[in-house]
Image (cartoon, rainbow, N blue to C red; front, side, top):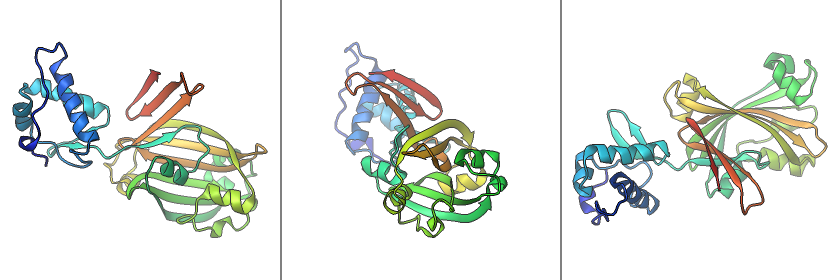
Length: 273
């Protein structure tokens, strides 16, 4: 736990005309961004923080609750308030695979294959065959993977792909090899388009255990079908993502005056830049 008594005196001015809780909030943000408060570290007690900042408990709570809503702090009931782990940011509509997305964000990606099995399309439900544009009796490879960023599990992903179209794909080591990179280098297929939907769901006990989260805690389910340069469906994937550790965003515009939509658990935030 951090010790506020060792911190430098805060620049809190009751006469500045700037709300006290905002000044406290800003000071805490600076300590988090500066590394003085590290991810996973517990904040000092409310009593200690109130003494340090010279504010009342309601004022302090208003500041920390704002930071909880913004994803910088997380409350563990009966334990305390902690600095949240960095969120995994993913851009909606990006044709990059998970590994490349994490590399771009400066994160270390890792994958664990939990299941690999062959099925008839009809055994997986009508939507899988329809999305992959294959008949009901066609073979479909199903691969369940756990995705990690900096060794933190963030996503359980169920991927479906045609082994007839991509012969030998079932033997690909998907723990060490990027699927999108293998499609490009081995099969000459470039992913150029995605159809992507998001919806809030509650984690099943099995997924929650894999993601180190509470059972039935909020999560984001992303359903993606990717297409090649000829407009043919390549793979269909359903991912369940920890809502408290992930962020999806969209950028629209010319890069100078863009609109940004961010989907954070548990709310949709829209800001115009």
